[in-house]
Image 1 (cartoon, rainbow, N blue to C red):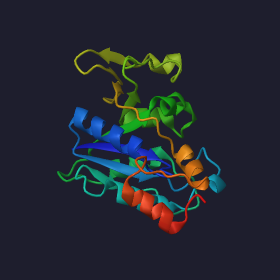
Image 2: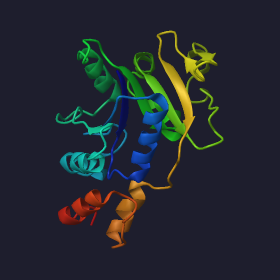
Image 3: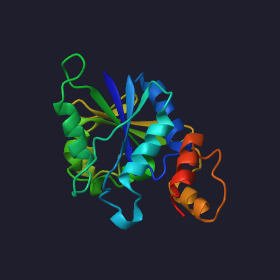
Image 4: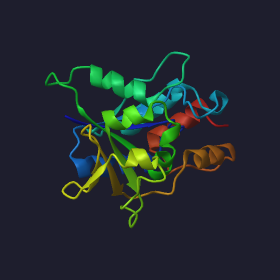
Length: 217
């Protein structure tokens, strides 16, 4: 089973997240994509992040009707920060539908990949699952440096048949161009505070939820 993981704060989730995930899922023939809101993002102050329940609910509303997409509460609860490595370990430890763990593809943008060395146990993470780094058209041929130290990047071998950098552990790093919609959660929150409409930036169900809950005011 090919399983895509898209983690993030999703405060709120928007069409940029959804469109990129759709294109990547089709490119790689994925069976499912899990959207995993971070309960306590390690790299963001807790005071700057909305309630986890609200963010999870918005993700659930956004993916309704798409059989490929699911909202996941894998990172709910607890007072400790939510680390991607712990989530991936948990998924790999659980038996899949055929009794074996899924092949995991972690989906993220180029900016996030540039900061990978700030992630907990990032070297182990890169050996446990493949990474799909989303780029803008014309920037597909991404370099592992400076995102990774030169000595670690040297472990990878470029494979022409899959157009990816392969790790000795069997995982890979793919750079793939997608339709990048110039939408940001930060801008959406600012627009709500200013009383401006966010129609066509987020699904209508998410917009209605934000209005009903009085979020970002």
